[in-house]
Amino acid sequence: MRWTLVMVFAAVVAVFFILGGGALFSQEPPKANAMKIGVVDLYDITRKWKKWIDLDESIQKEGKASRESLEQEDKNVQEMENKLTRSPLAKNSEEYLKEMTTVQTAKLRLEWLNAKEKERMEKLGTEYMKNLLAEIEGAIKKYGRENGFSLILKVDEIPTQERSLTEMQIYVRFKQVMFYDDGINITPAIVDILQKK
Image (cartoon, rainbow, N blue to C red; front, side, top):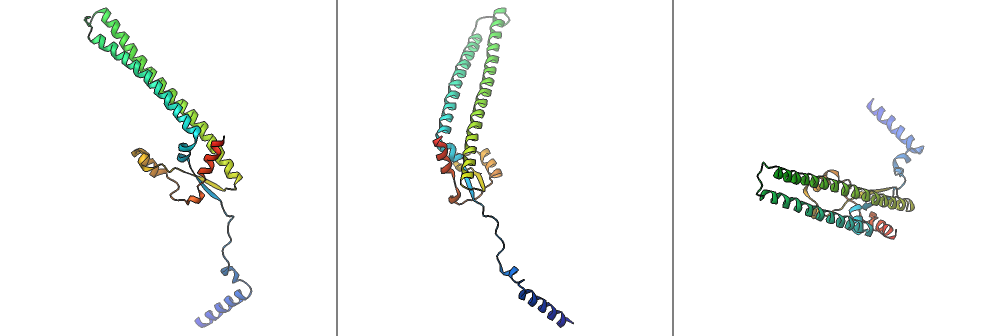
């Protein structure tokens, strides 16, 4: 019985190959459309794109000027407080309480100014960042379409020595591309496009 099953199986296999069924096993699997993939290092763009660098410097200068102004205001408040502390006025006198109210009002005003300035600078930075990232994204999409790319991935190759502990933890958790061949890095082409705008 066993011998009969082996013979039947062999006959079926022979007929299968004779009728061309063996071609199913000898052919390579069908290939999907070849994908053209690229990567872009956004960190590298931010270090090389002149518009980004100039805007960053501008924001830094504006922030520095703002901090210096607030630091001067803080010194003025501290001087007012020191003057009140050294004052010969009796602590329960009406004039002392009036001066104390003035100092407290100045402190509250300084806190308010600091909060408003922080909010203004964050809003300014966010607005600039949105506009610049939109330009980068537009350049990448245009380049991708014009050069037949199917997929362009973002990579961030920030050198380890430039990362804080928190940045390293985020980097480890969210790094998406672990390796890529330099031949698919289109960052220099994107920087060139952005420089010409």
